[in-house]
Length: 274
Image (cartoon, rainbow, N blue to C red; front, side, top):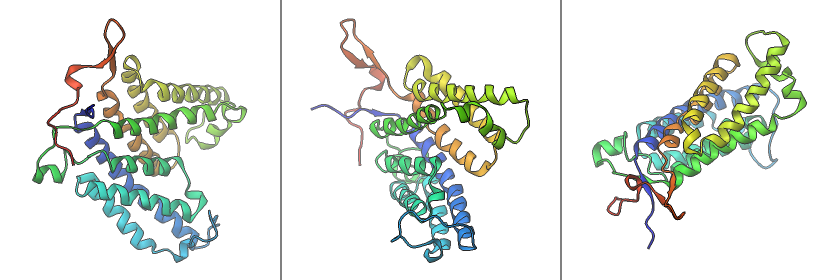
């Protein structure tokens, strides 16, 4: 019977902490947005049968969202907190179309994968009082890396159009003013960078460079564009997964071409599982 491949629990624990912190700030951002709709901002419902923001318990949602984020970050009931945060994103998005955004959908996907990732195996309250697990399953981590790489790749591809490449979008959004030619150059670099990240995170020879480029990209996004709360949260969701990218075991080959994994990263037969 083929054994499940298991890996070091620390990278996914780091991701759990970053996702929990991002969930706290996005709970505040989403609640603030829904309150402005209650106060008279244009409401854009997703479906007619879903209750409007004025009918939702916004304070309770804010409290639950922030508390779940804190508990996820510290590793207390991490699986259930991740599921609760994912459910709250569904409620937020259904409440108004204007809350449909890449960072909120990404948070939903990552929390769904965290439910199965045993992310509290290390650096958590659970590990502090019940013991640290020696390893965690690799599968959920691969799915999480796939989520951010897909986001990068399709973000880059979607920007290959005359409007974005002209630099007009960046000219309207950047907090500094540059010569028109620089906006055109930055737009082209953005497209190339995002496509490179979408592909480069998967390969041994490019993943370290991709991680370095990704960190620089998110720092520049926060520094040059508005809305620092949302963009910082988005950066945490992505950068928080980079240790998993660097630690993920990659296939090697025997001389005759038979695939294998490096011995130190093989499945552990006696690893404890939930």
